[in-house]
Structure formats: C-alpha cells, structure tokens
Image (cartoon, rainbow, N blue to C red; front, top):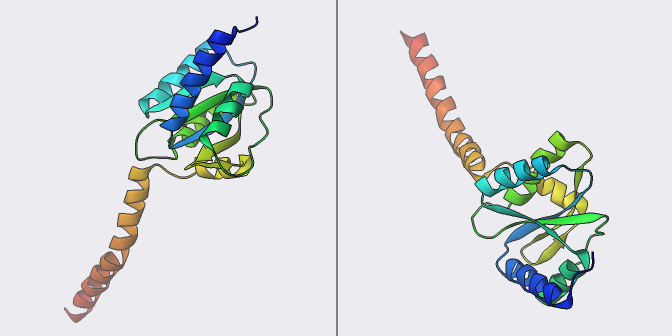
Length: 165
C-alpha cells in the first residue's frame, strides 16, 4: 500500500527528530519475525531506554543525509529497523540489546551497521560494540583491577606473618 506524501513528510519529521537526539543506534535487518517476538524485543529494549522503530529505507537515508553523518553508509538490505538510544550514558545499549536477540531469534534479525556519535559503523564495528559489557559491569571490572594489587599484597603479608609465627 502506497504512503501519501503528507504521511511521508510526517514520518521523515519523526525520523529526523529521533536522529537529532540520538547518541547511538544500529540498523537491523529483519524477516520472518512474529509480532509476539517483536513485542518481546521492544519490551526488553524499552527497559534499557532503547527505542525500536521500523523505518522506510528511503526516508531513513534522507534523514541521515540531512543530519550530516560522516563515513560510508552501510548497505541496508531487506526490511530495516532503527534501534537507538535517545538519552542515557550507556551508548552500547542498542547494539548489545539486539545482539542478545540475534542469538534467540536465529536468522530472523541481523545487525547490518550502526551510527555512533555522528559516524557510520560497519556491520563488524556494530557487532564489536555489541559485545562490550554494560557500564556497571565495566565499572566492576575496573574496581577489581585496581583492587587486585592491594589484595595480593595483603595476602602476601598475611603469609609472611604466618611463617614468622
């Protein structure tokens, strides 16, 4: 069914507005996914503050051109959804959220590229970002690295004290 010109203008305005506030996002190709699976995906992403929107490729390309994103736009095959983070500190959330569902839905969805801080990401770069742990986990890993030498020193001193007694 054809979309009227007025509807296209409205859709383009919505996409442009979303892109203006977007810190990071990924392009997802999908096919054969059920409504129940999409709803489950949207609910999981919404819990992390991430939006999932099915977009018309021509309108998305036009909005991205207007925004002035640098780099080479990835190939957008088939039906495309744009998964993006409107606000928040974890810029890896869109890619990571989709990455979890790629494993569950096996072959129904795929990362085809992304957008990060005004630059396009290739498929490989988007997949790389998807494997980065969430910020609280990274903070925990950092605290563990800082604590490790102190902990080892305490264990060593304790062993020395045991030997002297």
